[in-house]
Length: 209
Image (tube, rainbow, N blue to C red; front, side, top):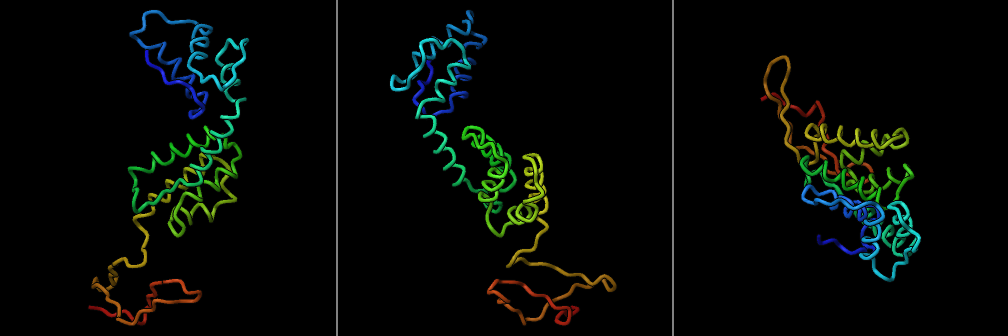
C-alpha cells in the first residue's frame, strides 16, 4: 500500500479516514486492528509533528494532530480559501452549483467554521453582487436560520434566474386583447437616480405593430 504522509496540509480526520479505508479494501485479506493501524499512521507523520507515545486510538491520534501548530495554520488557509471562493451563475451555470455547495460545506467543515452567522456571510461573499442569488439571500439574511434554509434559497434563485430580465436583455410584449406584439420607442434612459443603470419602460411609449 502506498499512503500519503501527513505533513499538516490535509485535515487530520480526512487523512486518518483515508488510511483506515485502505485497510478495508476487499483485496486486503488481513485487516489490522485499531492499534496496529494507529502505529502505522505514526510512521507516516512528519517528525516535526509531536504525537504522544501513549496514543493508541484513532480519536487520540486525531486529537494529537489537531494540537500541533500546523493545524491552526491549516485552518487559516482553509478560511482564506473560503473568503476567495466565488460563484457566478453566468459562468458556472447549474451544472456547477452542486459542486460549489459541496465544496463550500467541505471547506466550512475542514476550517471548523461552526458559527452559522459566519457561514452565511461567507456564502454571501462568494456570490456576485447584483446577482439574483446574492439579492435573494441578502434580503432574507436575518430570517435564514440553518444551512438547509440557506441552500434552499440558493437553489430557488437558480430556478428563478432564467426568468429575470437584465440590462441588455431582449423581451417581447404581447397585447392581451389584440394578440399583437408591442414595440418601444427609441426614447430610453440610461441613467437614473444614484447613477445606476436601468431599463425604463413607460406605457405611454409603447406602440402596437
